[in-house]
Structure formats: C-alpha cells, structure tokens
Image (cartoon, rainbow, N blue to C red; front, top):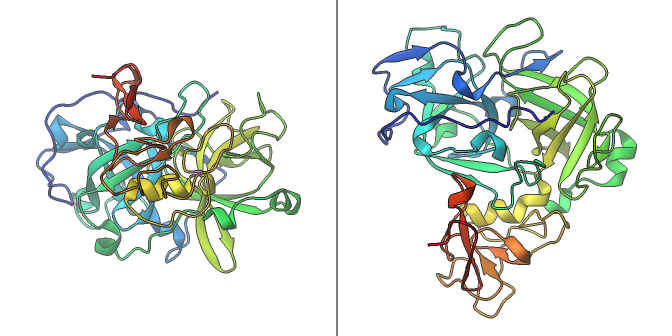
Length: 362
C-alpha cells in the first residue's frame, strides 16, 4: 500500500509573506485531512547533526491563520530556503496550504503557547516533478521554496542532496550501506508530532527486497527490509534517508511507499537520480551528470545544460531539447519554458520544443 498519497483541501486566502507565521488564531488538533505520521522503532534525533535539518510539513487552515499541530509529511532543508520532500505529499498543493516547522517536537510547548508559530515558516512556491506518477509513485520528488531563510534563522545547517557522482551502486547494496531515516509523528505507542530516527541497511536498487509487489525502478528508487520491527511509515513520507560519503552527510533518499503494516518493506526515491532536476528548479548551474528528468528509462541529461541548438537553461529561450519539466528526454528548463506542472493533473501542461503537451494546454 502506498504511504499517504492524499489530496489536500483548499482553505481560502493566501498567507501574508511574513515568516515565521503570525499566530492570529491558534492551533488545531491532529494533522488535518492530510493524514497521520509514523516512524516505528525510532529513537530521538541527535542534536547538532543532520537531523536538525529535517522539518515537518504542516497543514494550514482559515486562510493560513491556524495550523494543525501534527505534521502530515516530512522533508529536509537542502538549502536555507528550500525543502525537498515527496511529490505525493504535494498533490493538490499550493503555497497557502502548507508551512514548515523547524524543530524536534511541534506539539510540545517548551516556552510559550506561541512555540510552534515561532518556528513555522511560510512557503512561496511548490514544485512537483513533472513526470511524477501518482499511480506508480515513480519520480516521487518535490520542492518547497520558503519565503525566508529558515536554516539561518534557526541556526541549522542544510543537508545537500546526494550528487550523481556519489550515487548508489550495487557495491552499496552488497555492503548493506547504512540508511538513517528521520521523520515526525504518530509511533507504535501513539505518540505524535515528535521527530524520530531509525537505521536500516540498504536492501536493493529499485524495489528488490522481499515483499516488493514489483521491481520498481532501479535508476530512481532504493528499497529496504522492515521485517526487524522498525522503519518509516505513513506520514514519514518525504523524510530523508541520510548516508555518509567520505565524511559528508547527504539526503540520499526520500521516503515514498511500502506495505500497509510498515513491517515488510519500504521504498525511497533516490535523490542522486534527480540532481540535475533540482539544479534546474533552483536555477543553479552545474547540476552534475545525474538524471535531470528522473524518467523511468533511467536516461540522463547534461545537468541543466541545453543539448539542443538554442543555448543553455536560464537563457530565457525555450529551445530545442528543452521543456518545463524534462519530459520526453528534454532538459528541464522551467525558467525558460512556460508550463504548469503542479495542481490538478487535468490542468497541467508543458511546452516541448515549442509545442504544448498535456491536458491543460491553453
């Protein structure tokens, strides 16, 4: 069963641009219609580590003037003002429906009734991968851009995505590479809203461990066994699988889906496969040699450099070989190419080499 592939409900007016959020109305119990969160068999995070960069995604209500205290998904600050998470967490999302909490326990009030508001940050844009499949949960990656630098405000160091040249290999599988999962929410003891962590060994590229219903996509997914009684579960979706490479910690995976009981297997999206896509979305050059499109075929792009005849991503021209989201083997150049890659699927479209594709074409 897929984990928490839920849709959001609209709640009205846009948030003001200020951040942290102003607590005008107060708190609402639970996680709202989005769902619940779990890590089974977890332990508290280690302060002053990469765990500090893990954030909770919180549903907003009353036009952004109230917030549900339990996170519905998790994510990680990969830049001071950018959070990476799972695309299925962002289905139907707009910036006025979500804020991110920086801390370890949103539901505990260590100082005042305004604690959660003091560490809550507004979102300016929501981006899901253009080739994300809600039925197969492939290309399950998205980004939240914040209105301000939350990492600087909170004294947190962002944790970067795993580069393509440091990406997963069969040798990592053979070695049982340690994956450190982090997320918020309801546990096996029914606690809620608390950041927890758990370690599991890498089991396979794609969905190759016992219990997997299909082989998955080795180029863009990893899997791991949860038969030992611990691991991520519903609502931990979008949270990181951290790994260490040569003394540097990276966000290597994003919790995506697994079995209904969270006790057999789990699958995460590989961030090394999307290094080029992330760079394109953030307007960063030199996205490496990883898969910019994250296509199921495992094709690669040039890390944001246009392989067509019209120049490079970011030159203001949607040229040959470019599109808004990297479909059909093109480079994802959202700043150059018009399109709508989030919201209702029926409203989405993207220009590919000057031709509009998708059901939402104007």
